[in-house]
Length: 186
Image (cartoon, rainbow, N blue to C red; front, side, top):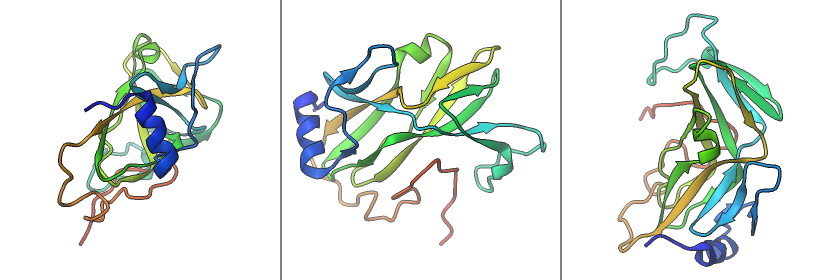
């Protein structure tokens, strides 16, 4: 079952699911953020990692090099043409064990050729969400910090899983800031 604004609000108050929680949809002179009818529009923080290939790095998800990015702390991040940047949400999420979360992009950015990708937030995951912004155009593209970046949709699960993200010690549990790809070594 997809949760409505009332149920998202109740969960955020009861279990601190979204912090800070904006209890209205703010949209005047900004890319909208806050509670919506059936979701929550999260904001992008002012921390960005912009892809660069200055050092001829190879993108290897099993052995990722931070040299592939330059760090920027700014109110407006410019992503080069046909490139991407990593960022994070302003909000810190704590997903209850009976909730599953999907993320979709904002139409304002999509209509500019900017795609945001976020993998699902699994039951009992918590942290700042790392956001991946792809600039699919041949022009530089702007991302505005502290404004809406994507919308999270919350689903009540019909049956609670046997093993949650927290139970299995997921590698991105409790992440703060922009988190680069990593592989667990056990």
